[in-house]
Length: 426
Ligand SMILES: Nc1ncnc2c1ncn2[C@@H]1O[C@H](COP(=O)(O)OP(=O)(O)OP(=O)(O)O)[C@@H](O)[C@H]1O
Ligand SMILES: [Mg+2]
Image (cartoon, rainbow, N blue to C red; front, side, top):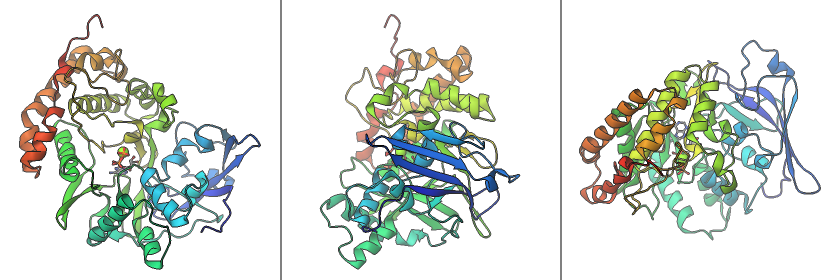
């Protein structure tokens, strides 16, 4: 792979509703001008537009049309394509494998496995290759955890130094996003995202994150299904892929686009003023086939995040999915508590109301109309959620195997004092 020149264009494949094999949707070209500015171009294939079952890649930038789409944002990679590519963790594995510190954006898409979120695929051939069926299984988790440990701990490990290391990197490589070590594994029920441990974890992450998903469900949110599997003397969290469904001949795939793409935002500090739940609700209402339900669900999610002090609720931790033609808000995933010191003020990663990112009930309520909720409805939702979390977090955490010591560590996360503070005259 190291000797291969960087590609400047590729084909984009898509697995359509009810299918398990992809078709070619279009072509993506990524070029850089003399000043180093990236320009991305996308065109849908005529053969694709002619199909009666063709669907848009995303409802924001790449609607179905016979035209050339261009972008200079996001290093020239359209948001929906970037959402299908690896992030910090997956890129790190690919860089090791390639023996290069940095690759072109197109290389990251091309040299990552086809376990990516959503229904897209990428390749150099005009026709898509047959999908590979060789997923890791839950039996491989101990090995995957050991490889992840080696990657996390030994940053200087020369990539591709010997055959077994290359194989190991292939084994753990994933196109799924996020920073935490992870791999995709299969069992008889289908595909799971395995979230592995890091040596610097403050608590048993698998059990705590699983508990957050269970709690969110009991507070009325739609969430990804999850379970914890003991691996050696540690635990691994398995989160069921909601964008894949096992079928007779392979996997059905749902399209998936992140909130970052919906907001036309970037993952940079300069773009952070676009990171807003209020704006996201507006976008969601425009694209969702059930705007009222989804806007209310998003409101519940903001409320839940504020009440567990989830300050890592950035826009790649929210998504919309389309199993068929229609787009809906995806189930909640990646819910993590934090225990900041401040009892007065904690900030979400996204703007939640008139008082910015403040994880505070009045702040959330200030913009409830944008979530299509009237004030009394929204107040009831907030009060119920606060009560539910305050009353049940500990019992649920202990039942799901969170140790007494870890409960002590996370207890300050739930319904912290500042959530209920009055912000009048702020
Ligand atoms: N259950 C799921 N089904 C399908 N896709 C998922 C699921 N859970 C997560 N994803 C996708 O995988 C990505 C990574 O997952 P997740 O956010 O849980 O990882 P992480 O490493 O903890 O992320 P972060 O960097 O935000 O801490 C998400 O951004 C989302 O695109
Ligand atoms: Mg995440």
